[in-house]
Length: 132
Image (cartoon, rainbow, N blue to C red; front, side, top):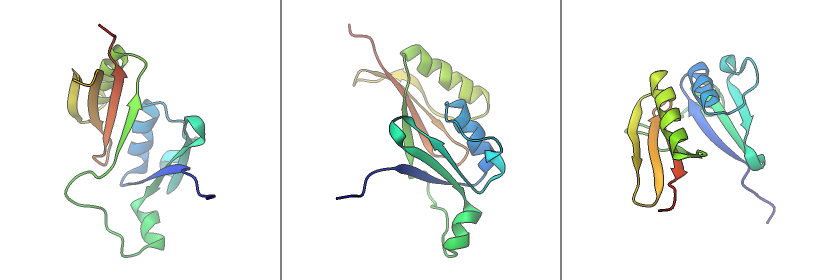
């Protein structure tokens, strides 16, 4: 088989807000990305995060409508430490992103939190807890 996983694509309602949000999480989008209809950021391991505006999607798929009834996508980002989960959650919510789940120590051994991106998609922040 020659097909291989290469990218994660997301449709966004406000490119500038989405680029600013994901830049705070360390995604490197090119200059001027906030004004484009399609942008890409390289991820570790060669994967890419692709963002497209609703207008771009409708240009090749006119019948497309955004999903209703809540988010259907989430990204999970591993932090270096439990303290970084807390810090990043505070930074993002302080910048106006809704916090869906405040940092907590999960029973599966991780410090865990969830913030929402500008389109309401969950972004999970986690780090392994120190061994007891």
